[in-house]
Length: 324
Image (cartoon, rainbow, N blue to C red; front, side, top):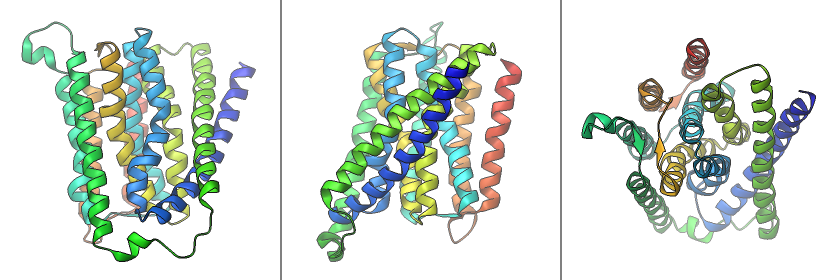
């Protein structure tokens, strides 16, 4: 138990340090390339902070542990929207641009609806088991390719309409080699720290007699989402809410389309203990994210709305534990 606690603390420290380095490096590269903070959050940062989910889900698929692979993604995405957006908004209200509300968040909702549909194939074809097949995995990867094409096309369009974006800023605070070093070191700290955190948390949970299903949807999901939480809060404190929003949006899309796409392509994944209640909560939280962004004309997720999202996550955790 003591070793697990050490892993827990070590993992958290590495995650926090890695998130800070990643945010600084990514922001510097964004300015050099003429890319917005949002695009960097949707791509580089989102991929880096989704790496723990990718590794764990693919390894779980290889080992035949489908429940952990799917539960990790579903739980992580619920954590991203409810806990990360909620807590980050409590730290600093998050202003949302019109393009995020009309394009990016709807893609998050679409990804949740696609997974909900794939999780109910038994209703469509009369099969006894709901399963992500290899064909489903390929379809998810195709969705991911469309998302990446859209993201980079939007970035090029924005740059072509803004001469300043093409040339970048004349004053750069960080040399390019240092920015890449910060990004690489930050990602390394996030991935290794996330792995140690999950090891420690899983060991503690197992010692307390918590079931594998609850571990997958709660501790493993929260542990692999800590990079997103740390990165988003750090970015928000530095006034870079574009990175914070892009990080969550990109990570949710990456998790379903890329992570589950890769995992299901490696090996078909039965949903098992991950049921409609979890998939519906994921879809509802994504819708709530969009609704809160539309409530006020200034398109801001306020501290009050952030508190509601965080409370929803606490309620979901309590329900999971009560029904385990």
